[in-house]
Image 1 (tube, helix red, strand yellow):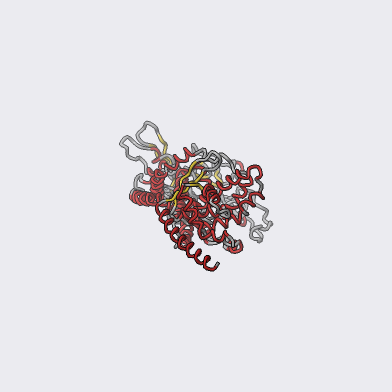
Image 2 (tube, rainbow over the protein chains, first blue to last red):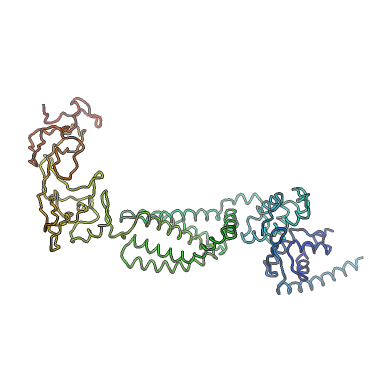
Length: 107
Length: 461
């Protein structure tokens, strides 16, 4: 089973989860996702997801100058973002429970 | 700041990605490309010295894959296949831009025409006006139902490049003066209304037209200015208006318009607009100020001496143009510069006088001027026209008139018969009129008509 296919549906939740802990810029979010074990997440997917969540009004952004290269655009969760995170977490938990039961039953 | 330039390989990659995202709204594409740039610089830092086009592609996929992934994750519309994109290459959006260019051009030309017009006949600017309005109407039709941001326009690569250039101007080395100029924007909104009022003054004259037009223009300009910055559709109005105003300003300044259109006088040849109002309100004479003879061949036209076909001088001749307007003489000498002590005009305004007009001797210090009868100070030789071929211009013999220029042909070149050195005896019609130029041989065929030319009726031989 291709993990990247599974990831597509939950990347929003994963990104929201990472940003809930701490604000982050694109590459930082990517690194934290990979560190958490989501190795297959693509760079472009993370950047695209951040843009979409931002455009949907779930994130705010601010720019921080960097010594090493271009300015870093940090993203932060706002109140609608936190609300979305709670909803998505509920959805995910019930979905995961259902799937676990289903998979556990058939095993 | 962006002092750390992107690695060339990464820059190529970024450009490729940008090309694939070119259809996105400019602001959004800019944002996402900033992210892409950060992403690339981080990956370059990770790869360190091993950065090659291949290693970059192994890590991120091809630019196309990367951009497609970005579009999918960001929820942008999927990339249109290249085939369908090509077919829509010159669609409504491009026509809209072309229309804007046409309107801009015609507005500029029309503005210049209005600003520089010098008489009522010169209203050719109506044509660029009509062209601009017609194209503008088409633009408005196409604009219907489009959002204020005009994402289709913003997606054009030219728009994006312009936008990026504007951004670099605002943030680059000239940020200070550029920001200062941007601050002058509201002053421009007022200034262009003033220019519109000036154009109305040039076009229509008077007071009410310019004032009313100016007030309306000011209201419109102040309404339009701030909105055009946000509603890009209004650029299709604001930019032509600016072009019209700039063209008009150039026209006004270029033509040195100091008098409004209705009071200006068209002179034949030389002009002296300083005196235009002076003359047109001079003494209520019936002469149409629009028809004044000024100069002939660059020399001041001082008088006109009419003769009939037999060479007899005519008196009290009035001249009219094809519109039935009386012709007069325009000169610097208003009423021959003759004003007596009471301030009355001792002689009528010369513009109203029939031809030949009297010669007036101006005596400085004296009260008034001596008027001499207007008789030609020369006699003429009527040319014979063999087959209508020779010059139709009578040749003046001698010109003793003071101040008059000698004729270009020396008197000796004209036949002596019919020319008298004495001032103004009527030419005897029976004396042989001789062509000023040597007549062609009688046998020679007229090259114009192909018929044999008749010998002169009264040959001198």
